[in-house]
Image (cartoon, rainbow, N blue to C red):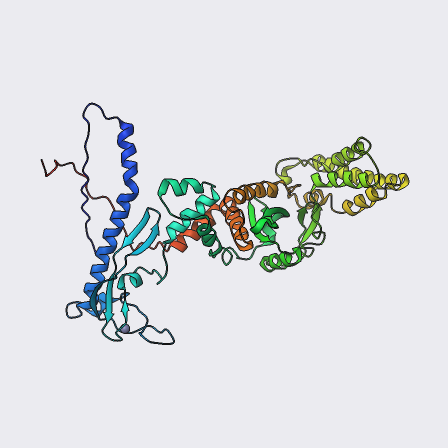
Length: 457
Ligand SMILES: [Zn+2]
């Protein structure tokens, strides 16, 4: 059905005085109100058209009523739909229906209809627009709100667009999101070069301190693959959830990288091989030696040594194209480092640094997982959890600015959104397009824009 909208804009121009900036400034102010007007006129016209088709069954054949007039049968305790598609117009609803849209608030006058079959009163436009009985906002609005939370420019959203939403309202949008049910497709562990997990503290409701835990995969192409975000959830439960998403459970030698988080020593042990974050490794040694009574100046040479032993640089470039002697060099360094660590443990024991010795012992199996993997397969896995720490900083900033005092569900959802939008931009966009239901059922273009003298003149 093709129709036209004719818009009349009246403007006054101070000849010889006005500049480009002022013209653009004023046009910008017009944007949202103009869009709201256009939206209103399209919806009102649509409402009239629907009512016409449903009431004039003498003119319109039943195929013209397809998709229109769906309503619940009056007095039906099981809330079944009525088959009746003929209505009598019953004027307008007493109160306008208010919608929050990206352009601002729209107060819409709605037609009421009475079904000739079951006598139910309803608004045919609402059912045609696929707007629920209680829905007060459209999905573009939700999209805009969530994007601005992620960009941390909530203020700009409120001030710039006259969108009226409270922090509580944003919280509810985030909690109500179905992000949890999406992005659950199985992960193929063969595509991963590492799995990284870490946790961070967040301030939540009533100043309670919560813990946000996140697990990501690093693909062989170096991309981040979000695996899961959890608030105040034990690692064992997180492991269970992640495992369900991993397709094969055979041991695959994917290095699993984590820092000093307790409870992670056997995390995903069936599919990954643990590796301590190298940076935290030397820091942990400093701490153990301190417990053994060593002052910083005495433990420094030892921690420096560990740093140097585990910090084996892998040659860049294609593994297959590397010269054998380059690989051999890494292998030699790896073997001598291992031996030196064993000797260091022995020395620690002799000196009575028992904490330091057991710390290194526990660590030694896991320190070189990335080197062993590289020697075996040529895959370079990241050595540190710094990737996640950066992500946590980003999440933390938003939580501080917008989401202080949020519930577990909201914190989990927003951190998932940040991760997915940041690292899987294409999936994020697809998700929204599907949510908005863009299917090509509405098209609009600018027909003509002409200048004509004002009729009053
Ligand atoms: Zn009916």
